[in-house]
Image (cartoon, rainbow, N blue to C red; front, side, top):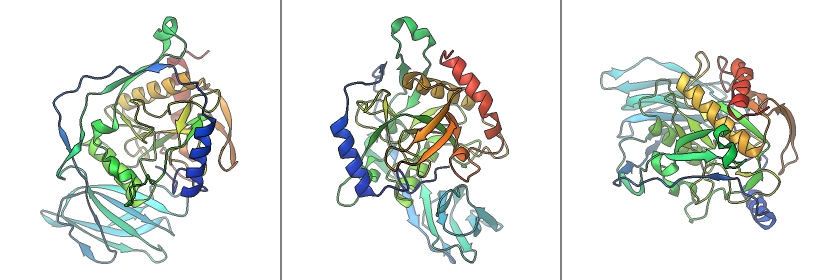
Amino acid sequence: MTSSSGPDSTLTRRALLAASIGTSVALASHRPAFAVPQPLRPPLTPVPAVLSSTGTVGRQQAPGFAVHHLGVSWSGPEQAGRLRLRYQDGWHDWQSVAAADSADERRRALLWVGDATAYEFIPVRGSGQVRLHAINTVDGPPTAATFATTDRLIDFDPAGAADSARCPRFRYKSRAAWGADESLRFGPDGTESFPTAFFDVQTLTVHHTVTANSDPDPAATVRAIYFFQAVTEDFGDVGYHLLIDQRGTVYEGRYSGPDPRPVFGPRSVGPRPSMVNGAHVGGFNAGNVGVALLGDLTSTGPTPAARRSLTLVLAALARVTDLNPLGTTAYVNPISGATRTVSTIAGHRDWAATECPGNTFYPTLPQLRIDVAAACGHR
């Protein structure tokens, strides 16, 4: 799960804007050598808007729509409190709410609650300011400005056509395809909450989102993550660069510009391709690409389809950025100067005090690195 209060926890919005302006002056002409075939546009299909309601702790809340996800954030102990939900058959038992992420001063959990009609939350003593947000990303009114499109094909080919057989390829759903409401990235005055800033890629980090396994509507979950992180938690956008569901479908995460390419900016500031700054590892975001598996990998591993897509995605990223999947990176945050030595393909817990990407999945990262190296032709 993401653990930042913004693109870097040590970075204010004003500082990020300054960093973005400084970066734009220093941009070089180099850009990643990959092509994205333009998809055929099917008949336009509107996507649902988000229905949301901010709740109050200590009393019953009935927002007037089916609640599919409930976002909870607080400060203090690991346990936030107790939650009970009402469905068509009445109130269900009380359950404890624990942090899915505890790597900074705010703890967070995004709970999939099905079709709850009401909820009640009782915080524990010392939990500080608790924020509750009921979210429905399925039944809102159609959004005319955003339409579904066919999946796009990413073909990373940094070494030229003669070497293209060794270059991983994967299809992904663009932000438009999964229904991103781009207005959520902007404040009431029309300014972008966290303007895009670009930094050379240094490392890749894997997460899990601690959302529902066997998710019936992964695109709706991606929209819920987007709303929770962009609006409720004020990250300005999705914290991750790419997300992968249990069917192996890849979703474009954080906005990286108007071009039809995820993750990377239009040009680079150094020898490697530059990525848009995300918000997935507090204090260590700049130059760090975040890829998240949807679901909770605490006691179960990823599906074969998700594992296969993750391998291809990481291989493609490593190939185009010339990173060694089996190597170690001496990471330096270009904004704050913070340093950390980690595996070039790291888990979130390698950066912070969190269980992400899950107790079952994390021990398998050494084999994942080997598979990624084989997939991207690294020798």
